[in-house]
Each structure stands twice: as structure tokens, then as C-alpha cells.
Image (cartoon, rainbow, N blue to C red; front, side, top):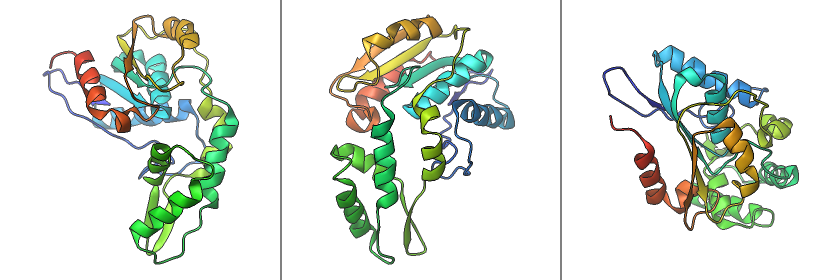
Amino acid sequence: ALPRTGRGGGGVLMPDARNHGSSPGSPLMTYEAMSLDVQHLLDRLGITKCIVLGHSMGGKTAMTLALQRPDLVERLISVDISPVLTSHISEFSAYISAMKSVKIPDGLARSAARQLADNQLREVVQVGNLRQYLLTNLLEVEGRYVWRVNLEAISHHLADIINFPIFHKPYPGPTLFLRGSNSPYISSKHYPEIQRLFPKADIQDIEGAGHIVHQDKFEELVTAVLNFLPPL
């Protein structure tokens, strides 16, 4: 979220979603709940208007926030995700099962631990940069390796995560959808629903990027975002 103040200043907030990173764990993992988390954060910080950017699950959270509370969102950026059912549940379920099954001996050096986890994930997660993305969640705690995402909560709410809440009233503000040209997550079949919910949407391709756009084409992503932002 990029806060906007009445004095024309700006800053960047990068909150971890619940059950991710350093944020608290919770058995509840829905987009409505994650949108409320952002609303509570903005309220606590006294931010009344912001530009919201999210990738994948974060993009669906950003869209939910904009549709629930359009008064809080000046502009919206969704990176490689549509406001629709994302994919077949089996693919994501297999990734979670693979992460749960990773076994690393205590006391192993971090580089060796990552390599071992990478080898164990390889059979299920065959795309190398996706494995590296998942491995960023491998955390050492007092010599033991654990996942810093709450796999149980995510697994339990997987159907909610790959889906999207039902909304009838559109978000009226400027919206940018950035699509990895090599990714299937924003399809032309999604355009009618994108236009229904986000009538001011612009859809742009990031050439050569897969789903993890910020890893594949970081500079191109930043340039597209900056070009969409209004001058401070």
C-alpha cells in the first residue's frame, strides 16, 4: 500500500498477509478477513487514502479492499491475478503437500538446508523459479528449519484462496492489471468480469514474465507501476 497524505507526500507499506512472513497466524484465511487486516492497519496509522498494489493472493486482497472500501483506495494495481477462480485446486494442494513433506536435519547450514529442500520439492514443483519463490519461506529457528507460512490454515482455506468473493458494485477508481506474458493467470476469458468490477481497468503485459513477475522482470514491473502512479 502506498499511502497518500493531504500534503502530497507518500511512502510505502509492505505488510505481510496473515499466516505469512512475520504477521500473526490465524485459522481464518479469507479475502474478506485479509482485507479487514489492511483496513485496520490503515486506520491505526491514520491513513485515509492509499494506492494499493498486490501480487497473486495479495492482488485478490487488494481488489477485495477496493471493492469493499473504495473510499480508501485512490488507485489499484493487481499483478498477474484476476477477480475469478484462479486454477484447479490440485496444483496448489500438491505444492502445500510437498512443502509439508520436506524434512531437513537440525543444525544443517542454511545453504545446505535450502539445497536439500529444493531437491525434495523438485519432483512436485518442477518450475525452478517457483521453487525458489517457495523456498524464501524456509526459516531457521534455533537450528531447526520451519516454514514461516501457516500451511495448515492455507490448506484448510485453499478453496477460498483460489476463488474470489462475490461483489455487485464495481470499484470506480483507476485500475491497472499487469499480466506476465508467459502466465495463464490473467486470461482474455476473464476480461468481462474485470470490466464489470473495474470499469476503468487497463490491462498491460510484462513481456517475458511468468506468474512471479517481480522475480522475472523486476525493472519492467517497476516501470509499469511508476507510469501508472499520479505525480506526487
